[in-house]
Image (cartoon, rainbow, N blue to C red; front, top):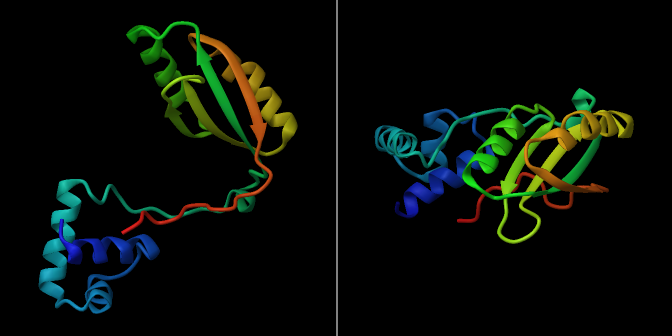
Amino acid sequence: MDAMDRKILAELQLDGRLTVTELAARVQLSVSPCHRRLRDLERQGAIRGYRAVVDPDAVGLHFEALVFATLRWEDRDTVTAFEEAVAAVPHVLQAQRLFGEPDYLLRVATTDLAAFQQLYDQQLARLPGVQRLTSTLVMKHVVDDRPLPK
């Protein structure tokens, strides 16, 4: 990956709906080489896809919490079962496995506190292998959906 590829990625992170012609103009490259580089970046997996960034408030998800999960055991079967179950919970927007304790960080969005409590009691607390869950509420987003650094 060279400097031109990084410029292409930086522009697409700001606006993923750019046409190849617009992208080429922004990175000061002719259309054909820009298109070739774009296809290579997609093929190599540097660009994993294109999607809309939706405002959670606009779709009624006004409540966000970070949930820390500690597992009873960290054997392969428990970890796999936990990760598959977490992936099946639609209100879990992100799930990250951590070094040390806790074992996982989950970012969860719901309509309100009552909906979060219901999700917590009926789904999160029942995830396979969970020993302990600890939650903290998100007051506001200070840095959100930032493009990757160059």
